[in-house]
Length: 157
Image: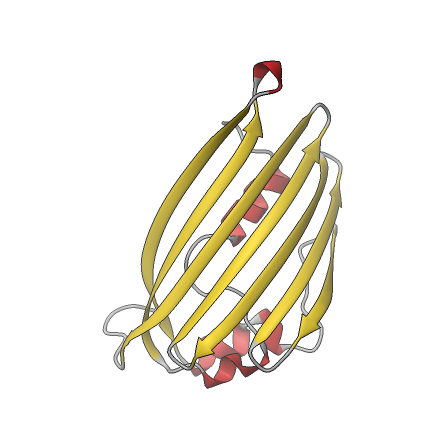
């Protein structure tokens, strides 16, 4: 499937690893983390049928103080991608819901992201999006989990 820049941008933002997170994100335990993402895409094909596709991936990543300060949800006003507008729908000490609407020459998209910390050593999240282009619409749903693995990141950065 050929991806337009708009869809590619959001798929690139959705893989495993450190997602945007809620206000208490700084309380997450520093060290080595393992993240798992499952991305489901529902794309219309000839005759109006929908062809589902599911991709599952995992990777380890390092959470340290520098990484925590780069997190968009820790800033008062996150900077969305060009052509997009972020809106915080709700935010508590452990959960945030954010909507992002994008309008670009190739089409438009609407994304909703929910991230919730379950403890200082794990978090979960979900995104759902609809990207519309002339004569085509792509729906995606992305779930992710991350768990702390070890105090030392070793050679992971």
